[in-house]
Amino acid sequence: MIVDPIVLATFIPAALALNVTPGPDMLFCLAQGLRGGPRSGWAASFGITAGGMVHALIAGLGLSALITAMPGAFEVIRYLGVCYLLYIAYKTLRTPFGGQDAPPVSVKRAMRDGFIVNLTNPKFILFILAFLPQFVDVSRPVLPQFLLLGVVIGIGGFLINGLVGQFAGRLKSKLTHGGGTERVMRWLTASLFGGLALRLAV
Image (cartoon, rainbow, N blue to C red; front, top):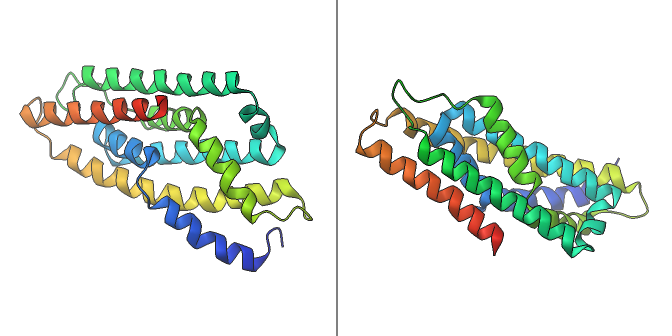
């Protein structure tokens, strides 16, 4: 077996505990659900999971260690993520949740945004480097172990974050078209994205 069954049995509850802990990924899916409905929430969750798998692949190949050893590259990645989140916050403020003039938030766009946000999140890189190696047996092929453990984290995160996005999407369907509730929710959602950018920056 790729990963020792006992190690895997220890890893799964630890990964689930991390999945249910509120973090930027969960808040992002919440905000995307508010913007585009349940399908956008699930799409954002899938994009985040895909980005996480890329990090697991990079870590397994040893490239993430190289990135963290180059502070300049690490900072570039971080501020790219900050800029992208601020851009999404701006677009959220400018785009009404409801009404005939509101362009729909496509599932494809929500997926892409989730992928980019997680791919440019240096804290997730550090998480992968700090957490996964504790469950890796260096006497076995390392890359398959990283990928399998990444899949376990990804499945749990996809389901939990997707459910959060679906819940937020249900709230969207109850918003009045162009009313005070819609404006408040739009500002709150934009504030979520802005808060994520601030957290990533500091």
